[in-house]
Image (cartoon, rainbow, N blue to C red; front, side, top):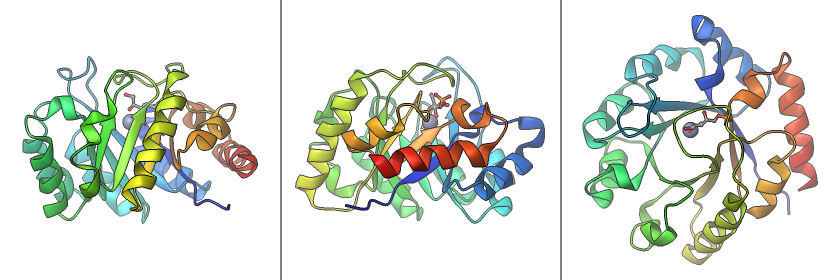
Length: 222
Ligand code: DX5
Ligand code: ZN
């Protein structure tokens, strides 16, 4: 079955001194989505970018902007990212007091809503909200830093989430994030992922086009 796979470079590993150019280049190189990692030095032990940076890159590309919130609290900042041009906003259920309310808030602001599962987060968080989700993000590292090693248990989790998506019968994207590279992208696809975040394995290479082409070649085999 020919699948619609999406590659989402994480700008966390881009050269921030030339961010607009990096975004333009990576999309021109064949990527589909711009993944923006938002960290608050509270929910995760790192600090990155806020809505201003999302707003700054919005005019640079037509590609979807996929905002991955690693912040607590979540709700206060959701409207700001929607106004800044985000298309998809995902959050960690542990960081929200009221998961269902946060999903509704994201959708009310015209964005697609995603729920992010950490390596130790149980799938039960999906039980009562899967019908309201547009995307499920399975973390294949613990959140907070780029350049970490893919945790193999994520493959089983991807497969389990894929079954839940099939049971739900809706077009929910299944995204994998952390340590994804040319060598393991096919495995993640076979486990059920259709959307692949990759930071260091793209921005850390000299030729984004060649790297993304190599990823697509792997996906074609999956
Ligand atoms: C981790 C972030 C990821 C990460 C991906 O908290 O959510 O998006 O930056 O980077 P790589 O591909 O380098 O693991
Ligand atoms: Zn991310």
